[in-house]
Image (cartoon, rainbow, N blue to C red; front, side):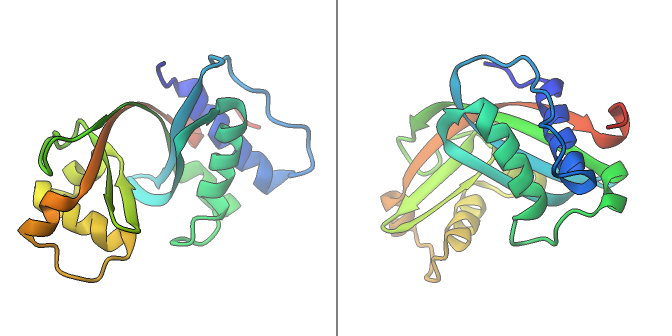
Length: 186
């Protein structure tokens, strides 16, 4: 399955409607396959593409429900950011990502920066990064995994021995973008 700009546009329309008229009838869905898929909604602000919200699900689910739910969560419930306000809408960009090809890694560095997203697990600790994160941050394999463990709440040192004990799943994404300023008025 491939992400489309219409999927990203739908997410932006849902966000705009939640701000302007949350009681209005639902935004019409784009044509989407009936397959279940894991997905993420990432919001950034232009012109510098600064992260504004990112929420997703690693479990395949009903895209028709998840697209709406995750768009609202990314805009209004990501605890790292204040709720998106109406005046921000013209600067908002949505990246809609469909996750696929989940594979266990044979070693802690058995993945490609920029190609694979990661789920790192160690005991009760678990966190994920989409493929773009390590590349955008300029991290190598080790730095990415150290950051993932910090994100998961692990406070100890990430040693070579620990790296060997990490359970790492890699995945790929199909992603599509849409800028709010490029959609027809709601």
